[in-house]
Image (cartoon, rainbow, N blue to C red; front, side, top):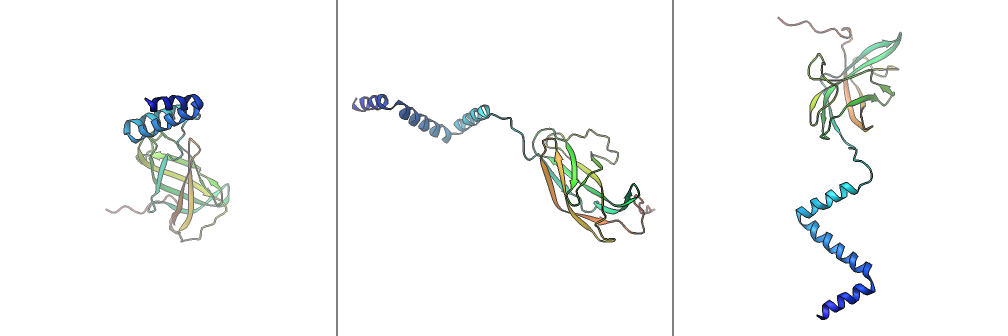
Length: 190
């Protein structure tokens, strides 16, 4: 009985502190149990003021054996044609798009960027949740910075619909053979 009288007396003197202490104890005890953690996560999700935009949506891996560069021209000026080949996986669990690609130095935007499941590329350019598919990007870099016959290295940045920049570091592009015109394929074996 004496404890109850002391508790009521304490509440009358400082109700805010007693309520805060009780809430803290209640939250702490509920967070210990799995159901309580789920409850507080749901409460926090509803209280947040801004919508959740994923900051990491894609994983991109370069295919070193297919990525290449060669000499070309843009409106009669010398350029490097750089072809990035790789795979992209959606890790956000939402449909995603790869909207742009760029090489930072010298700053160059991709002339062509597409997702494909086959060489014909007849598919929607949207990644479904958790889907993995081929990614192709073609750049014309000016001025020419690669040396004939040597591989060229550069990071490539891919940008999704949320504006997230996914940097693939140390991409290696092998040099196309000097005696082989771009687009020529080796003769087929019989």
